[in-house]
Length: 169
View 1 (cartoon, rainbow, N blue to C red):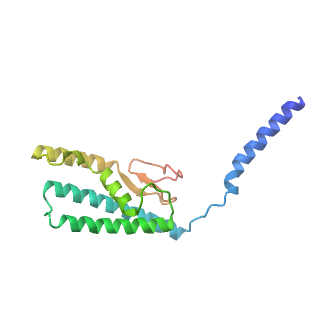
View 2 (cartoon, one colour):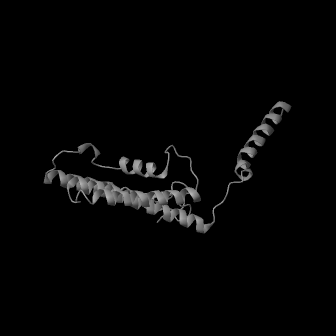
View 3 (cartoon, rainbow, N blue to C red):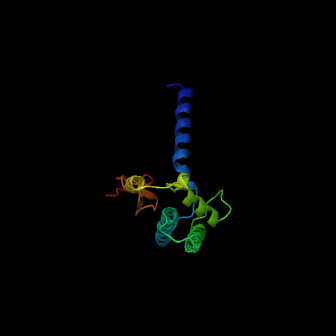
C-alpha cells in the first residue's frame, strides 16, 4: 500500500470516530424519570385541553352551548391551557414563535378546528352525520399517548416509537 492511501484511510477513521464520539462530548441536561413522567403527563393534559377547546367551539357552532356560557368556558379552558404550557416551559424550555402561552394554545385550537370554514352555514342532519364520521375517522389515527421510554407522542398505528424505537405492543 502507498503512504497516501494509508493516510486517507487513517483520516476517514479519525473523522468517523469523531462523528461517533460527538454525542458523548455534548453534555446535555438529562431529565430524571420523575421529570420525564411529569412532562409526559403535562403534554397529555395539554392535548386534552386542546381537544376540549375544539369540541367547545364545535358545540357552540352547532348551538348546543348558550351564548352567555361560551365565553366563560372558553376563557377557563384557555387559562388552564396557558398554565399547563407555562409548567411545560419551566420543565422543558423550547423556542417558540408565539409571544406567550395563551397565543400558542389559541393557535393550536384554531389549527385543529374541523369546521372553521363553515361559519354561518346552516347544517342539516346528513352534514352532521358526515362530520361525525370524519371526526371518528380522524380520532382513530390520532395520538395514542406517549412512549413509555422517551415520552415522545406516538400514534395508534405505531408498533414502535418513531423517536427511540422502543416496541409499543
